Image (tube, helix red, strand yellow):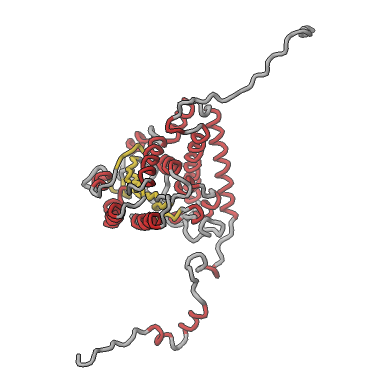
Length: 375
């Protein structure tokens, strides 16, 4: 048997290092890019498992999926600060996860369980976590736009450098409350970014059917605030735009309006049969899927290898399986505490008992009309 020469020089140990492109845009680091990719995958997998749970009747009510729009939430929230205030609409799972809310608690909330983000009281459309300055999803279209203006007024009044990120869809721009909110923000020079996710549809109505204006930024320009469009399918384009908008607001220059051009790959909600749009249109937009698009960027700039991207996907999938199992095992809220976490001052059972007694009608009766003398 042949043996190796004894005096052969030792082979140098090969050390594998990741070659990082020093020219990443926008001052981003490889770690930030990997984080944003993971967040988008996390949102996508969360929504896919939520849809599966809905089909199994584990999620009640309505379920509005964020699939296709992940780049908007991830790009925007990474461009802002963690202590900035955040409000969203009823398609709100993406904002919660991008802000750092626990996926297990989010899934349990969808299941209506006690371990949910809001103890099972909010459900899919009302995720919120005050400790993260995430003030919830709002089911009334556009209702949170003036609320965001009010929060921005509080930041201005208290002389803080926090700003407000207020997300809504193109359908909300036809509501009077949208114009009230923008008018107040512009009049008072408030530090708020209005982020309109224009996905071309307000429920089942096309943009042309719901608005005579095809570009939502035109509606904001009437209030003298800067208003721009960005590619909502490109996380870097959103990041750059919100970064610029945040600097504008934080410097005391007033509100900023961003129209993110995006697309939802699924129906308005899980109850939507999608009879109003052509399948070929959906397929065309799928070629702009923000996740593989950013994944290609990461590979091209040597932030990640294809194998590392696949590993991220596998890790997130396992994380989602654990989230579903956690939600399944979480207890139901105790019916005796139905008013807990709902009212600042829960209804007193003793007061209810008094109202049920014979004198209840007198307690609840309107006061008699008092007429002035001589009338």
